[in-house]
Image 1 (cartoon, protein in one colour):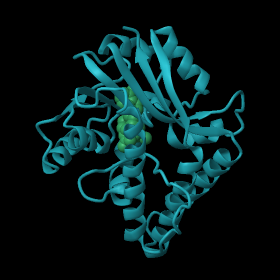
Image 2 (cartoon, rainbow, N blue to C red):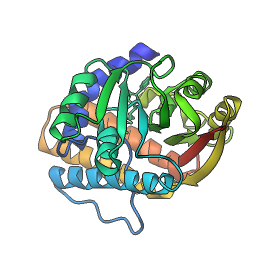
Image 3 (tube, rainbow, N blue to C red):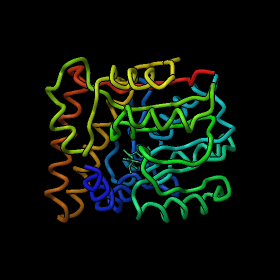
Length: 278
Ligand SMILES: C[S@@+](CC[C@H](N)C(=O)[O-])C[C@H]1O[C@@H](n2cnc3c(N)ncnc32)[C@H](O)[C@@H]1O
């Protein structure tokens, strides 16, 4: 399973940068739209720019809320940092000292280079490792933006209770599937190489390792329009070039399925904050 994730991300890196890469802060997560969502533009570059803005907006909403009670100026562990978008944003916004943890060898130099060129190389330290086994440091906050869905939640929280200081926080944005509904799980898991879990599993793993849920908000409606933007990008990209037609076709089909799951209450997008016991 792990090798599959590494292979998936190594193969997808150029594509992530092409699709979401505006400047040196590249996010690979959903975007947030406050209603009414704007109409999707036509050109590839306008769509990419709009998606990058919506991804930044998701961070503003999430960390705006979380900053009320967690120490975002302190030491932060960014679990599954992707290409470093969240780590760089946190260092820029809060002056945090961020450890950007990636399990993808080829992402390590990319994150370091993006952080350096964003002028926060001194505040973002890239670490290669696996979230289940990572040791090193004590953190005020551990952040996981759409990475918890890859993890064995019990093992991960077992690690977090060593890494997060008493009273510190674990802040999660992710998609969970609802109740016992497995209708969409197999195809979504297969396409994104994840192992999506019901939110109860996340809550249970956290509580089992001494973390209390302190905040939870459903953002499904706000991320829903983002799926239309990604579909529109793939459509515009296939019209612009014949290359990758098959991959883009599959992407469109799977994003439609994902949208159906969001609309049908099969999966939910949530912001979840946990606090470690004092
Ligand atoms: C959907 S991406 C999100 C990336 C980043 N958080 C962002 O929002 O741009 C999921 C991330 O989880 C990472 N990941 C998956 N399994 C992991 C593991 N076992 N240890 C560390 N990172 C992992 C992947 O490498 C990838 O960077």
